[in-house]
Length: 151
Image (tube, rainbow, N blue to C red):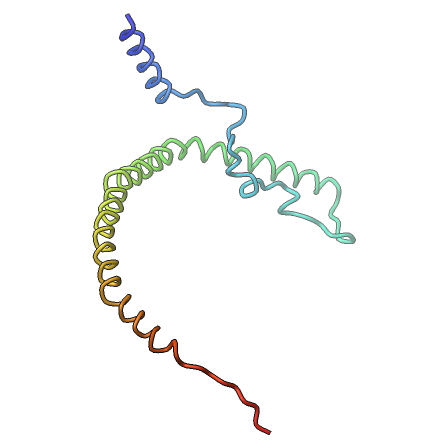
């Protein structure tokens, strides 16, 4: 009975991973487009003091800008949203595949090989350089420097 419950739980977890509920109200929960894409009428068009157009022109311009931006985005996302989602999904799948099956194994292999080389390098330094520098230290330890000020 316990194994059957665990299998059901594992199946539920796998199902949850592949069928995640999406939030149709907050479509940017991680705020990745916080400052980048938010463009309103006031961010693009502004009239300085003394060069105002007619109030009616300003209102119609505002409405035209807002509505055309809204519907143009909707049309483009309707036509290109699914194909671009497919393209981006494919691209990120390829990047993930390369990272998992090529990059990480190459880095691990490199780290294993460099560890072996580092042991050999450390042995060479201890064998050749340590005695040399110890001898140079002994030679230079008897050197005395005196500073005299000549008048």
